[in-house]
Length: 193
Image (cartoon, rainbow, N blue to C red; front, side):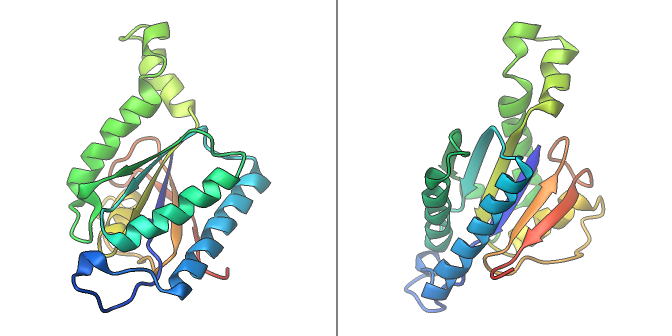
């Protein structure tokens, strides 16, 4: 399973509230640049996930970033099974442990359970084997410090900070299950990169 972490684009620093901050024109352009790089990478490697669940912070700048993702995914013939969901857990102050629990439940629903009826609920093949070979992904569209913290937690059991995500950056993490220290950071896409 792939987990993609996309930090929102550059946002205006002034607004009535932090929740209402909007993307700047540069934030829109940078985000579109990264999304297009991502789509090109998927096409070149013929590795588009069959199912993608996109979880989006309720804050306006993340919602605007997700709208750009939705627009470009809709224009791509590859992303037909994509579901977008606003998720209150992934705000800047999101708690990684709580989010990992939620991601594990999504993982079970998306990956392990589709064959449970065919294979039998208790069948190892139905619950695990097909789950690990299934081509599903989860994308989080959110903020720092949360995204950098969860990225580091997924790829390092200690959760020690190795790298943060800048605005409009997208990290790809390969993992068998969303849990601390089991992921491998495959790449990070940056604007103009």
